[in-house]
Length: 135
Image (cartoon, rainbow, N blue to C red):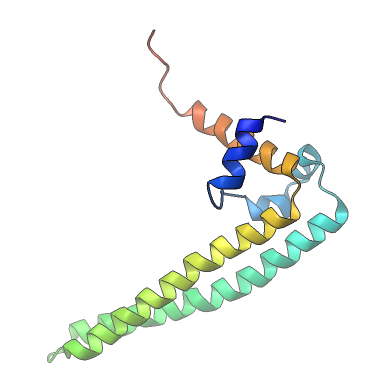
């Protein structure tokens, strides 16, 4: 196990974990050597998180519609508009927090070795898109 990679994972905050792929990709499950109980726990996190996100995204769309209606009216009430934008900001924060919460919960289920494998795969994909190094 690469000590530098493990240190980066543990101290740089939440990393991107492809939560949905962990429950839908047998190849990824095999590569990470996920156990059945890990898959079940990740699946529960995914579905609970998605339910929460669906509700928040619906609320976000309704607020955006209210903002559009307020902006298109003849007499724009700035105080109402400010309240709508405050609500929108709150909902967007909750959406971002829910994503982070899901990743952190999954990270707590995975072993250190599995986390290293995910991070190494992410860096391999990232390097494919970088221009070649000029020497």
